[in-house]
Length: 319
Image 1 (cartoon, rainbow, N blue to C red):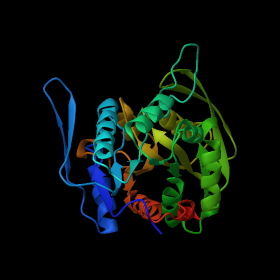
Image 2: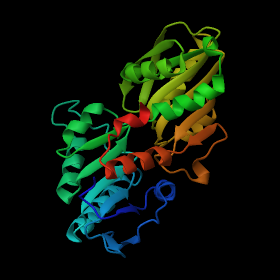
Image 3: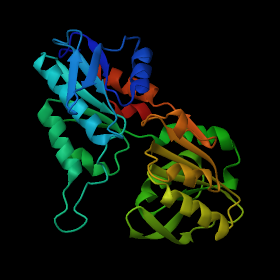
Image 4: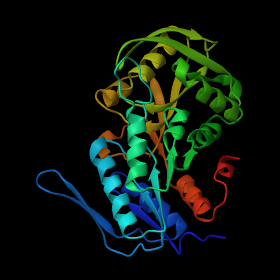
């Protein structure tokens, strides 16, 4: 039985309102009444236009571009709800910004993901609900419960329907060594073999493909990654798979479409035939390409929220 909140309320920040509306619609709830404004000097102000006293509150906010504004907006919204006596506050972050700064890569580096976790906790959040953290151990940066959803089953379901029984014609490929576990799990879900692209990164956002581990000649390949930022790794891997390894077609799947800098041009001019993405980061018309297939995450988050509210296990969503 649920004792911690008299009702459930879904609020949205400004970063991903479509996902918030989708979640609220699936749960049969109206979106919470709030707004966010910016003063002339850049300060962010949040106003709640309904009572949250004793309520189970969920704030949907992806900390995507502009990352710092969206992060600060979420912190202020959490603080406003805490001071308004909300029963329990969950930060619903389909995309967790700063996740790639999860360790000291060199001397005197910050660990910004840990700092963000501390800020969210200090603001008053009681729980975090997110999807596909860049590194699973980021869950340990929080001193509050973290429910970590995964996007692979959504993407795998789409690709399974696409390839049908022709699993022998496809190979799942990890674009780098860091994504091998993710690609292996994806391959197991759709029943295809696995290959790995071995690359050497010369400097930030620039990668050089070295060789392919596994047999992809004459096969259609599916590249799998957690996020696409500048798309250098993805497009270089796709080109190497076709030009060096003899793949016939290249498809790609990723959870988070950061798509910064030259990403759109690179993808548009690449050999990738279809890129399947989730809407953890919102899309505008300017960011949409014919190659993109965008799948919704609202149903998964809605079920997770329903389970959190009812104190039922979230892990059963994906079996």
